Length: 152
Image (cartoon, rainbow, N blue to C red):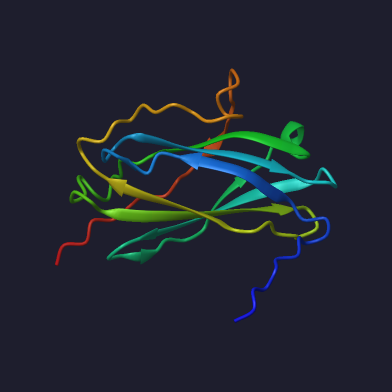
């Protein structure tokens, strides 16, 4: 079987690095660190798609990128995982977050998938890799998805 090489989209933003903890307690403030570049300097929006095992996909959440971050973006997305629609979630509930970045011309970066599992004993502190450990990293925006607990 031949490998198909991925050709970068001309003028599209590129997500260069992503980092997030793989597990944490329900209700934690989960941070997804992102670094991205755009040759045109017109990054516009971040698309956040959440999938919850046993539930399915949630509507896409959008974060607008501030003008000072449109050429080079480095920061984190914060998700306060407690939900008013789920007083608790069972241990080992799995979610995945897919992020991509759109520019003002409608070009989309590659989509990055970040898995996460809710575990009550999991550490919420972790060492950040470079370049996210270089001083004050700004919050780019908040993820506003309310998780559901499906009672069967």
